Length: 430
Image 1 (cartoon, rainbow, N blue to C red):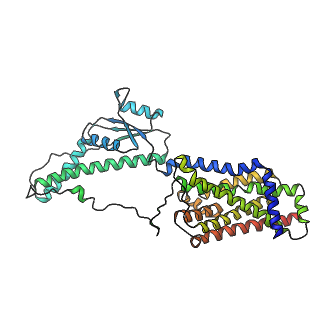
Image 2: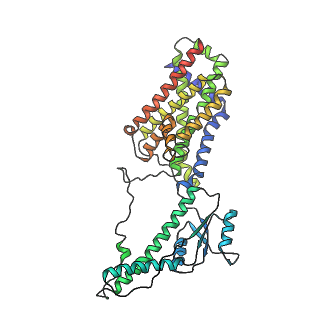
């Protein structure tokens, strides 16, 4: 035990001599975490605070066009631009501005839209009136094809395009339904036996069933969602923790090159106790780095206008989980330092492998939106299981009883890394 503690203290002293390296080990992951949380804040908030300027060209001027414009202007995310330089926009001018990239979106309401909606409403009212035996008939004609024209900037992302199209389609469908229901309600009210009685209020009756979001967890007092901070802070903190393999691999290769490893092994006693001291230091260092990232998420992010990181109540389970993750990252660093001969081989491979493992493991984007093949490949990434365990604790109010499977898998990864490293070292001595 004294050898383990002495090795731990010695490693900490050696590491403290490189203050620049120590600062980079903590400050770079912190900077990356803050930056990614800021960059991905808009997608995680589903653009709720983003303003989209829409070039609005109304060639119809009817009720449908006016109501649609008013409804869109009532949505905080949309700003309708009808004139430029005190001149009404034309369809050609709007298309030109969007194609140049000056604006992201243009909507052209062609002539006849309101008339077609009114004609559809009359058709519905007449058909129902005929079935009910109501006399009289509203004017109607054959339906004609008419459509709103939507122009998008060619460089706009597909996800944003679909979101805007869904929002526009929802408004168009709702307004058409309101106009048809209003016409039908008036038609039926006119035929009612008691005209002084209350109206049918069809639109109100069609809203009998509504939606209400309920927390799926047993703890109803806390409803956590995967916002930018909840995803990015734990995810990039794990990413930074695994980058501890760089100093570990570099240290092991340096000791082997300058003969320090041979001298250490010649010290009386088991080399295993010295190795435990070294590994223990890096595990503690990784855990310290991770919890600093969590503290930044809880205290620093609100100062930048973002949400505060909610850690949950299972502090003991979180500590044990981070301990296992740090041990897995340390074991991977030992593996890299054992397999490769020089720093020029180990460091690029170690850094790029962490980037790849994080990409398929859900650090950059949720695993659920990856292709099916990559979703299966993600199970080979220890970062996937680490992030899954952290999300279980943070977002699902989990405990050690709900993350034990992930921890077992991470320990299997760690043991496998140590085993391969041990086999490699034993063959090198031969």
